[in-house]
Amino acid sequence: MKHIRALLVIAAAWFLFTAATCGGGSSPSSFLSSSNSNRATSVPHAVIVTAGPGPSTTNPYLNGAFVDVTICVPGSTSQCTTVPDVLLDTGSSGLRVLSSALGGLPLTNMTSAGATMADCVQYVDLTYNWGAVARADVKLAGEVASSIPIQIIADPGSTFPSAPSSCSNGGTPANTLDTLSANGILGVSSYLYDCGDACAPGTVSNGGVYFACSDTSCQVTTVPLANQLENPVAAFPSDNNGISITLPSLPDAGLPSTTGTLTFGIGTQGDNGLGNAVVQTENNDGNITTVFDGASYSSSFIDSGSNALYFLDSPTTGLPACRDAAGFYCPSTTQFLSATNTGANSQSNPVDFAVVNVDSLPAPNWVFDDVAGHSSAGPSQSGLPSLYFDWGLPFFFGRTVYVAIEGRSTPGGTGPYWAY
Image (spheres, rainbow, N blue to C red):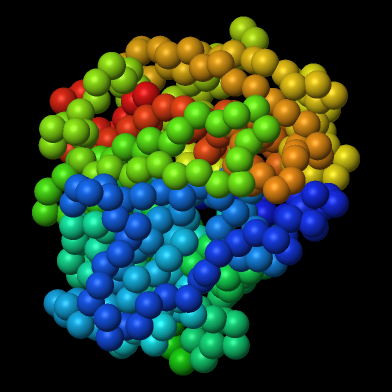
């Protein structure tokens, strides 16, 4: 499980100009509405994905992929709200939503032994999400995950207890539209839970993911699997063994935005089969191996929540770092490279990719398939070695990428795996 978010701020004149001209609406629908727009497709097991800057005009998201999610009070068809512009993330599991995006939806915080449950997730850009855990019905197109735990990200100035130091860790809370650059995060990785057995009773410590909170303070606690944030797709009654994401190819100069589809299930319907995709199973750490320039990097992964192809570092690649866009590569001319991904099942697939000068990205475009940065831009927060390949959203353009959920049977074998 990887929690790798985008580096959200690019300090360049292009960014400052475009930030004032791009963005979309961010207000959720009334919680009295039972509608479920979800930018729906013509089939009940797929929703539209919009790749673009997202809902924040102050802090737009370079290469963000967004969907709409309908959230309801468990068992209700009238107390619902559709939250737009939720970041689609194959690198985490569970739904996290800004409290401010729920429009007053009356969800009830979960408790254990009289204490309120809270969840924390940290990101490599030194931001974090902190907030209560509540049960909700989560609807995507015609699919419903009933009464699953989700995180309600606490508003600034909320009466909810402040994040303990083991959660904040000197970082900045991403608890508003402009700090998160989305209304929430939909985690649809290959894993069932956001923490799993590492946070279940009987463990020594959960590493600061779950907390039990009184009115004034919070302490690390263990949580049974049934009460942890769950991958919503895994909780669907059907089409619950994985997902696929299809995004179109992009021109060299990128686009202001584009659309694709998020389809639920692998081989469960006539239109969601694997086709010729090569299945690459994950190793015990949830990774695959990328071979680049004769060297192997066994902690690599595929993650739609990362806004670039993050790999290695300048001394290893010979690619210069950007002057303005910290953490990104800026070669003087576009570099055309290749690598090979191999799964734990020894199945390999080559990948051709390009690296552009991020300081020279053309306005007003926000989606590109050739944006790259160095993986050492913050690995201490992710628990990863400093050198690896994070195949972020640029990898998804021009192909269909499948994510199979652990323990679930598919025509390509039992998850977890990626296929493309």
